[in-house]
Length: 306
Image 1 (cartoon, rainbow, N blue to C red):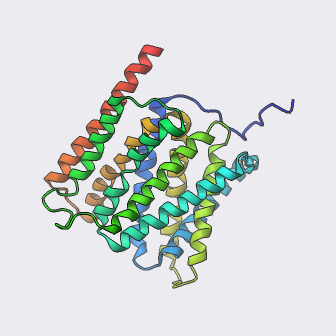
Image 2 (cartoon, rainbow, N blue to C red):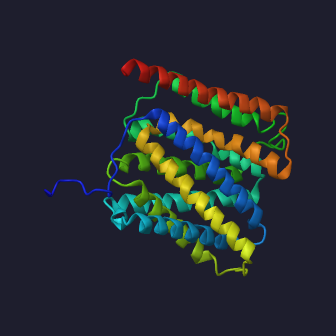
């Protein structure tokens, strides 16, 4: 084998398959929302660092077991160490900012503001990835974001006082997440998805472990099982999201992150009996409509090129 030949199983080439990328984003968002539901279930008893560390190390164990089963530890060799460190740092920062927002503002507002992330991705993709973003896709993204705003209850849902400084926490989390997604797309041609998944997950777990000793509570067997489940859901969801950017442009798949809100509505109804009101339904219609429009346009363009 020559020096320039690729090592089997180490790198995964980029494949332009937009519909597959959208499917990965939708499935990953579902699993990530399920992970959030499990974390919500147990987070009341444990502090943030302990939850992040326990869930993160459970995910690392799952990844290691899969690699051992496949006999492919070469995937842990890093081609872009600097980019992997930056990506892990962006994940840590995004998690810290998002949770800080949860502590000082209502959950619905925090999540809605964080979903400005696709707008950031769409704005950054032409500059950092040289991707073409036409006015139709821009319009669809903005309509989807309008759906999120509608879910905030325009009849005083902001508490009558407008946004305050606390909104910078979820907005900052969204910006860090957008840069993370852009970076994922940049390295996806030469870095295996398992590589990116392993080191980013390990980074967040280590960051949680630093804070875990402060306020540590001994978990029971049920808690350990739930945290292990959260780790499994987390690593699978992030693997699918990493694969997303191997198959499709960042600006194309970013709006489908909005589907997490729809999954959250369904899970909330099934587990806690939460029933969405009229504003939530209207926002969901706008949200789904924007995603279906983007999918329709991409399908038509793929058909013309085939």
